[in-house]
Length: 58
Image 1 (cartoon, rainbow, N blue to C red):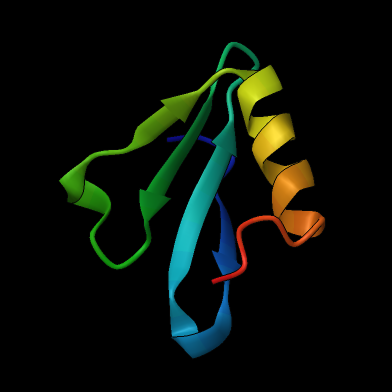
Image 2: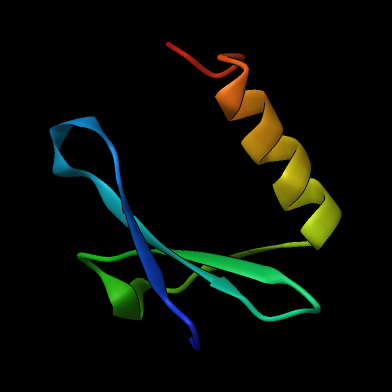
């Protein structure tokens, strides 16, 4: 993946996010060979907005 940006959450769980224009790819930084999830830019933006609003707090 290009343009990786490690993101860390509580407990040290990290993911890498790559903005590839046509899609956003996310993978586990501790297991980069395990594959990735791909999202459209709109789906990713919706998810990020929901996280910021606290809609995915467990």
